[in-house]
Image (cartoon, rainbow, N blue to C red; front, side, top):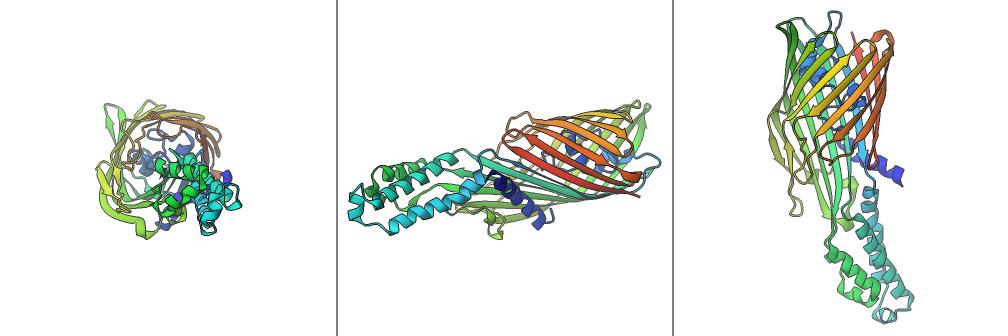
Length: 415
């Protein structure tokens, strides 16, 4: 059951992602950096800079050529309570409870030893247990992806990017009155005549968002007092799809979350920007800002419930120490990462390392934490293969608290 849940919940985010051509804690997905604790503001390559920090685009070496990422993808699931299956399966308990009501009469109910009375009592108790087990539980899934073409140049480097990230969250509102009514029926089956299943008030919620960016990045390197400083900017078209699935918990079906009935969309403009500086041969520091223009977008109102998705600037600083054999890196968000107003904000820090024992092999590991303690802290790891230094295949995985799992992959071609 747990395995089925992990694939099921992440499928909500992934199906939304795929349906709209749309992870990760960041607004980007890049397998190498994700394997290193989600870092990359200073340690990313010129070919991945348009995804992470556009300033890195200007850090190409003289023999570097056009780089194509096609694609980078990743997904993550967090759940320790098997929530999505529990909410979906509660309909079985509701149907059982309703079926007992269809087959009873007053005479049977007045006899607590009758099979009908025992069946009503058992069905009401099981349904009350299910509701009680759902209190305060949530589950979430993330998915992301991107494609990019980076063209280095001594004067002005240019890159084209299309990237997206999707996130989905399942939660519930359990009305204590529902539990109390069902407990009363469990204790005294004849009380069932005062409890209409259609009057129960508990609700199930599915919130999902997809943010897609389509942009052109430009970057240039300057020499400031002997220090190479790169500056980059990515103007972009930004499309957002929001889903507000709000229904009685007794009719909840997570497969309906991505129905157009619950969807609202919006198109706007935004900007990413960054800066990176090299100190000596081994040190790089960087600063990047994603979504520099704040945008608040309302969901569709469903069953009297509306939420707001917040797109706000995420500013991240990073530092990296690197040699041909070893890279050590650390990133930290200077601002909070927001989402739906109904959710708590996060703020991430990460550390990572990469060892390159062979020219075609890299081994990576890292750790990422939410200093606000609202998202799971995770360990990350991955490998990279670069046969002939033309085809690059990067794989990553993560594991963390609260039954958090994730994986990603990336194919990069250099010409």
